[in-house]
Amino acid sequence: MRTSSAVMTDTAVRLWDLRFPSEQALLERTRAAYVDLDNLIAYSKADRDAKVHAYLACFRPDETLLFFFQEGELVNAAKLAPQGRFPMAIAEALVHAKAEPERAEFAFHSASLEQLAAMYASCSQPPAKLQLDPSSPKTVFDAVLAQKWSGLLEFIALGRVSYVWVKSGRFASGVFSEQMEGEDAKTYLARMFASNKFENKPRVAVKAFPGLEALPKQAPPALVKVFRQYVWDIVDAAGKELPDAPKRAEKIRTKLTPHHEALKSVGGARGSAFADPIVETSQFAEALAAWTKDFLTELEVVHPTIAPKLLKDATREQRFQFAALGFFERLPWRIEW
Image (spheres, helix red, strand yellow):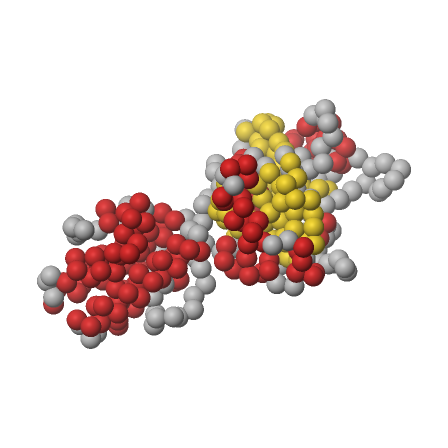
């Protein structure tokens, strides 16, 4: 199989050559054609021994995809491409990962939640504007110490990616790709910047990021489908009572979208295609509740008793899931089941 020559932004490192820190290799790098991705995800979620914190890296010709697992549950995704790094909707990332399996490879590794948050931060946050001299570990840490900076440092050398956490300019902790047994952080960093008779001195790319305290949990594709179905159902039911209800619904959705990004992914005519939102479940529930409140409140002006009935009918089949998200508590109506 011919490997990709796509290069990561601001480095000389090929995306195909990236190697991330790992606690344990759950699946060594394998051609995608030999891996059933759906079974891997299902096994991670269902099997007790597989419920670990981990990342799945998918190396494709023009991008590297990262899937993040928390206790076996797929919770987020991101991608690295020549154009930059971006968070990615899980559903979209899965479509990319399943394309051209004969030209892609998978690697599945367990890692700490702290590392997973660092990996996601490096894809979802803009780099901090620090003047870092990547000629040696000393020049890098002298710069962050002078500014008493706190955050995340990412080092990439010869494809090996490492993460270092800094507090008030001083080293706090780190995770390192291909760290030797018994090798401490200082020794590893010195080796990263050093040269030897077998290779030239590597070009080390260093970036600083604010970092994240925890890995965000993206609203899963299954829940996105439930929310879309809810919006279509309640608008269709309202339209049978008030002919202009669909227009009102879209007008309110458009008004609220600048404040609730998730609303870009619901609404429209039944069956309309939307990209999944890259938001946490609680943010999606909050957006949907805000839209529901404004929509049903407006309808009640001309039909005072309509809101509870529409809400009850539209959520009946998934009421336990909506209740678990605190959806009903965000609304002024109380539903008797």
